[in-house]
Image 1 (tube, rainbow, N blue to C red):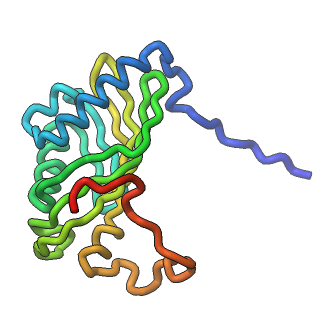
Image 2: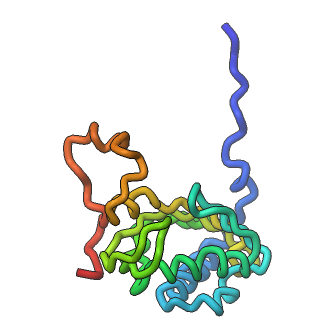
Length: 180
């Protein structure tokens, strides 16, 4: 019998300084407030100048604060107005914080080639933040672009999505909605 060599797990958190948990919580709380205030120009309060924002397909990879502001925050805010960010769950340990949640917003600008519809959408996401020296230096992100597109009437899977195997559909908001 051949024994497979298993890959090392948790490499990025191996040297996590657990004494930094409270500081990390403070940085993330303040940053989410800044997002909800739509304060793009002052995000340097929370993000290191050299930080990396690593998103899924459609979102891209942004290196540095300016690229993040110009290549993610501004286009996203142009596509979706009246945006409210709601972390539905957070887990924080040392220099790391993970969250999943949603943004509620109005589709008021072009998104993925879809003209503005004025529809309220729920934008599901997951974030993993690494905080060092009081600022976010890495942000691993998954934003559910296919769900947004489907809410706007475009099926990116052309009928081949596995929702067809589901016995019922789930609510995109796992906690009470803000916008009615």
